[in-house]
Length: 77
Image (cartoon, rainbow, N blue to C red):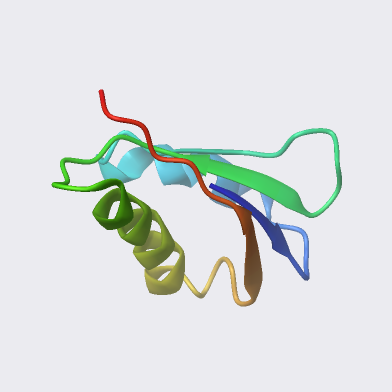
């Protein structure tokens, strides 16, 4: 899931995402304020998997207070 944020995320927040045990990765490409959140989730549908990633961002509003999802992809594994 690609998303943009109004403020830059602290480097520590980018590294701490890996500790959540959901096989999540939060990366920042070379473009400022654009981020890529990827992960693996058990879900019946792609919609449920995407909802899990968006839910992760909503649960962590102390890190990402405002964001706009720009692109979403879900693939079966």
